[in-house]
Length: 480
Image (cartoon, rainbow, N blue to C red):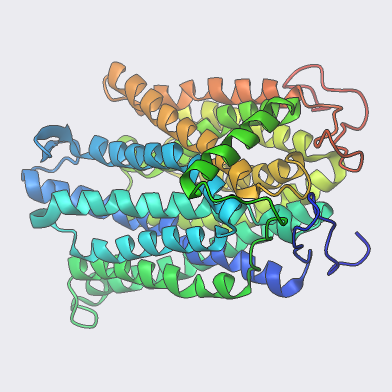
């Protein structure tokens, strides 16, 4: 596109247009990554899982986080309950996301839906300040709500990418968003660690806070950070394109939402490349997300790492993830999206093998660095690749991205169940579970290779993603 700020033509006559590559809009969009990425880092990956384990130990009076606790009349191992809570939240989003996104597309209220989920998640994070042994059941429910808020808002946020950027900039803008998220989340995590480690380092409570109080304060700060910085994208993202005259009717939001969803579903049936990519994404991302969710547990339970070592590892992942997102965005410009993704997935296969043998020490940190490098790459490139596959200027971007999100969430649920099931069968040894994840990556690579030599967007002659030279003969071929 020659004029970076020019509006593209609409897919339907009468629909308002959004300027593409407007620096104010794209910069504001990346700030939602800055705002919300504190949730997966502070709550999902680092401080909250450790605090959860300490609360479980307080309740049970044991030194193991695996000891069963009572929740809604059920006796469930503490560590398993956390995974089940995440799975429950993802199932909720997987069930309601398609309908809500169709409603948002139809009504032109995509930003409103994004705000609702954002504030639900941020308020729930802040509510975790009250999570203690005496409020355990309520705390679990609040944690589930926080996860629903985070997952729900991401669907609408991602759907803006094809609307605000020209196609040739999808990869770089997606990478910039993830990098902003990594930087912002690291800044807040370091702040929280200063609060939490203050009493340990100085011997006296920092700001009069005990370790437990400082930890719970970090959850409150996470919610404030998330909601506060989200005001930047909310102020800069454009209003949704209006519907053409006569396109709406008075049959009600709910019925029209189902109609929009049905329309998108029928459209996907006529797009083989979209189905191929979603199948590939479902399988390889199942492995990626499972590793990300169990990494802290693997380090603490299998490698017996100290809390400080776990936190340093997570910081390493975030910092290296910035480099990985940009590196693979540049690689995709040279060899195409699917080929760059294939390289990343192949590296993940090697990570699974190495994970079986890794020990505490230099090998663990080296493996963490490689995970960080490919973690950012896979997430960033997957988002931008999907944006290149869906129909250009579609009036249903949120609905299309709901299929992308449902694919991810269902994959995470299955991945966690498979990981936990294998670990249980093997007597609690998680190394076999890590090794078994290689199957997901092999399948993902096979499905990705089915896209070789094809244009990503089948309705557009301007979106080639061909493999230069002959196609790879096997996953280990140097031409992959």
